[in-house]
Amino acid sequence: MSHDYQAIVDKFIDVANEADDTRRRALIDALFTEDAEYCDPDAQLVGRDAIDAYLGRLSKNFPPGLSFALTATVNGHHDQARFSWQFGRPGAAVAGGTDVIILEGDRVKRLHAFFN
Image 1 (spheres, one colour):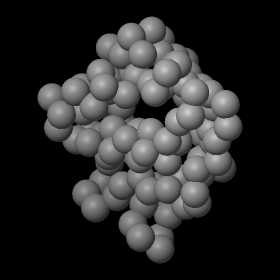
Image 2: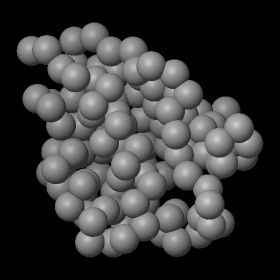
Image 3: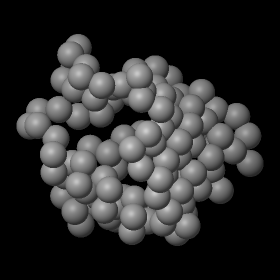
Image 4: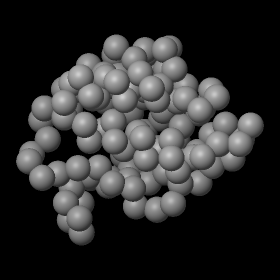
C-alpha cells in the first residue's frame, strides 16, 4: 500500500496544534486507529480517549502564540514514517524532537515521540 506520509503527518501536526476540544477530537478520530498507542518520554497511552485527554491537557498549558511545526520533509516507507518537529514561534523554537509513526491503512496505529 502506498501512503501519503506527508499528508498524514500534517494531520498530526494539526491535531497537536488544535486547542478546541471538539475539533481536536474529530481530528483524532479521523487520524488514529481506535486502539492507537502514543508514547513519549512523559506518557504511554492507549486509545483515542487517552490520546485526546493528554493532548488536551498539553494544549491548555501552551503559552499563546506557540505551536508545533515540521522542520523537514517526512521520510517514510512501507507502513512507517519519521519526522522532525519544533515547538515555539517561527525561528524561535523552545522544544523539538523526532517522532516515528506506524500506520494501519492510512491511520496512525502507533506514534513514538523522542524529544531533543
